[in-house]
Image 1 (tube, helix red, strand yellow):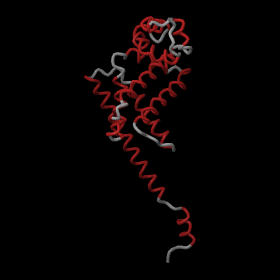
Image 2 (spheres, rainbow, N blue to C red):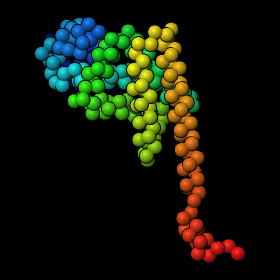
Image 3 (tube, helix red, strand yellow):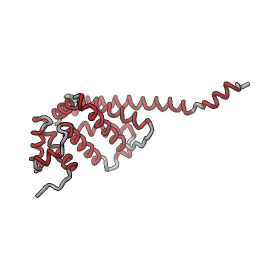
Image 4 (spheres, rainbow, N blue to C red):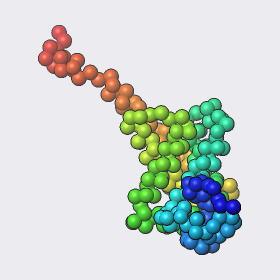
Length: 215
C-alpha cells in the first residue's frame, strides 16, 4: 500500500530516525535510507522529501523538536509562570531533547557553520526563537519583537555549543542558560527605563520653554 502522507508529514516522521542514524552515518543519504527502512518508507520517496540534502534533514529534525515542544506545553502550564520562567522552561525542553543525540548535533552544527549554509542556519535559529516567544505568550509587533527573538536565538545558539557538557543532568548548561536569561531580563528592564524616560520627554514643551522661559 502506498504511503499517503504528504512530503511535509514524511519529513517530520523521518527526522528523528535520521538524527539517530546521523550519529554513525552523518547527515547523509545513508542515514536517510536507514530512517526510511525503519519507517517503512520507499527510499526514493524519502529522498523526494529532502531535496536539499543535509540541511533539509537538519531543518526537519529541528522542526520535529519544535512540534514536540508545542505538544508538551499545550496543557497551558506556561500560563501560570512568569515570562522568565516560561522562556527557561522552553529552552531547557529543547536542550534536554538533544540528550543522546550529541554526536548528531555536533555534525549538524558543523554543517550549519559552512558559509553556504549560514543564511539558512540563521533563519532556522530565528524561527525557533520566534516559536518559543509565541508559546510564551509574546505578542509584541514593534522593534521589541525583533530584539527579543535575536537575544533568545543567541542564548540558544550559545547553549548548543556546550554539547560536550559532561556535568550531571547537564547542570552546567542549565546554569549557563539561567545566567544568560538573567542578563536578558536586566537588559529588558534597563531598556524599559530608558524608553519610559523618552516617552516622558515632550519636545514641543521643551522648545516652548526655550522660547518662553519660566519667570
